[in-house]
Image 1 (cartoon, rainbow, N blue to C red):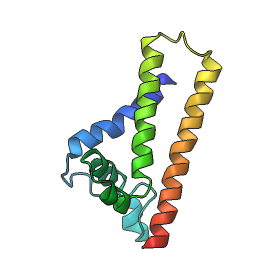
Image 2: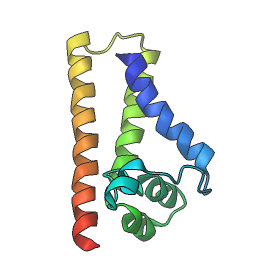
Image 3: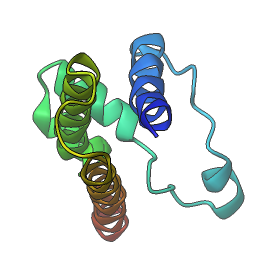
Amino acid sequence: MLFLHGTMIAAPLLMLVLHAGNHVFGFCLFKKLSGIDCPACGITHSIMAMMSGHPAEALRFHPAGPAVLILLAGMTAYLSTTLLTRFKGLEWRRETAVYHLLDYAMVGMLLAGWCVKLCVN
């Protein structure tokens, strides 16, 4: 479970570092097939804009970007704390429940941001 969530946290952060403002990952199969943005379209640009100190631009790229960045930071801190304490924190079932809650929050934020983005455009 921790490997899965560690990968879920590390992969987007690695993509952000590799992306670094370039349009390397500019291909979205969902958008290519349907003609509309997918729920995650613009999230990388939004997070990069937030990290560059441009919150208005971040909201324009994807309304959920700032919240997703905060949640990613929280998930990273939680995972780091869990690993550093060698699981001496919560009992394993409660740890799993916390991760599931964070997963649902992330998906909910992406979908809510997507709906706002579709309504505005």
